[in-house]
Image 1 (tube, rainbow, N blue to C red):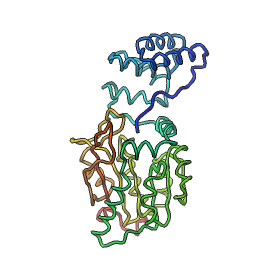
Image 2 (cartoon, rainbow, N blue to C red):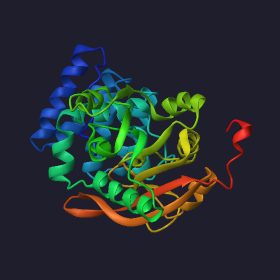
Image 3 (cartoon, helix red, strand yellow):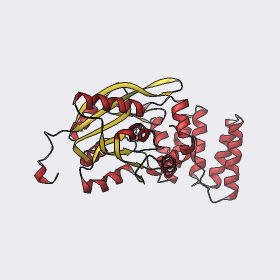
Image 4 (tube, rainbow, N blue to C red):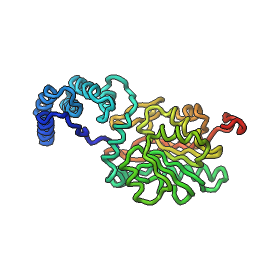
Length: 323
């Protein structure tokens, strides 16, 4: 899911807010030069107006003014420490500043709150999203190869969204827990009646709390979630702590030919094929890593990976240690 534009946050000045909306009207009519001129006047009236600075950066970018766009996005970033507009991501896309910045919780929350009511249609019908089905098939393959039944006493759906992955796995799960940063997404998931428990929380904070009661989930699924995470090391380590000794982690990521992480033009992260190393560092063994496409972008399939891993018993401390 990509951004729809700046979230309007008032400057606190009536005239500046009015000029901002006037500029957007010009942009909607295709008059980007006029819109840029009006926005330049707007930020003179309200120098701390992050929304206007962000819009000015976006319009300058459309006009091919890279340096002007960078300058405006820097002002938007500086005026909004929580970066609810994603100015740092736009700067990274333009090759300025940190090239792989962490997405702020405020940015991700408002992005998905905006999309929550039309998320299913946008993903499944327009983008041919098939992540949950591919994940279930991969888990079934791993379980079958190990001679284990496709049944899990408990499952944690990380970044559960509207419940698409929950629906795919519910028939084989006794207790289903979903967690998502977006209240709007949680509302949509609750309406489907799939989950035994739904929690609105940042994933890292939730996992930290669950880690106090370690080894409680037999299956952890993260479908189309890690594309919003620049550094997978901490979250993989946290997941390893909440998995049972024979538990399964299954997730999807977008990928690229090299190693490490890259920010794609869609403002989603693509992770390299060195995921086995990251999983190993978190005491997880990779049982399945398959290249596929979990969705389309502008009609073209997006290179993705479907990954299934399990705790590495050889590197886990003895049970008597309390791990």
